[in-house]
Image (tube, rainbow, N blue to C red; front, side):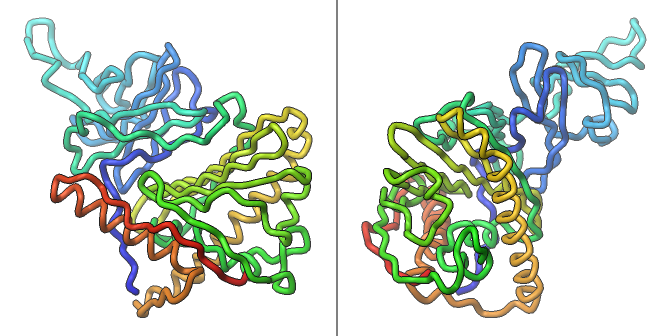
Length: 348
């Protein structure tokens, strides 16, 4: 099965963790090949503009921001947080010019559960009248965000997402004494169901060979949900508390993605384990990055790929979900989720 590399527009993408964006600060990011300036105004609100001055094309991220207006470093043109030009220093008082005619493209921008998301439409077109919902971790809020890690992968969004949902690579890519090994592989069966723009591995007890879950006690259950364009949310219940791991894939370009791993939990005492968890997460991200870099070298020869068994079904669903989303938009009809209610089995 050949990979699909077309990215999805008219979707929300995680641009930057909120804690990296202070009041009166802007940061230049790359989303789906587009340079975008993300900022936090003096009142704490967030905004996103094209990171290109319409005058001479220099990135606005090289300029200044006073919490209200962005100033281009080249000629001092200024723009408000909505992208409207407010000042051109070179104009004489006698030279009349309607500044409002000059605009920098703005993008819908929201801060949800401690993270800044940007909605990227196709071809800088006007966004839809009703925007889709931003993925949310259940039973937690911004105050429960305890750990944020990121890593840049040298691959396409498709390759990163397929790796994200792959249940069979763990004993090989992530083999370790503190997680699992090839010797611990055994048969597993998991129930799946369709969910919003994706699918859910329905709630179950963690596998016996997943050692990290044992730190949370004996009354542990987990549910894993995937949602287009590239968000994986694992919701773990242990007793009356919650731990949510959120992984997002944000395409920078056609061959580079940024992966954010976020952890929320409701037990303050677990903060003592944060150094251990941080090391664990960084190792996982690095291992996935390294194996995807190796895969990239093979994909340069354009091989024919095979998705053959139950462990590969989530990857097949991902491509089917993308195809159906494109078709539903082109035909102007509701999205019809192609994922069935089914139990899959594999060894891992």
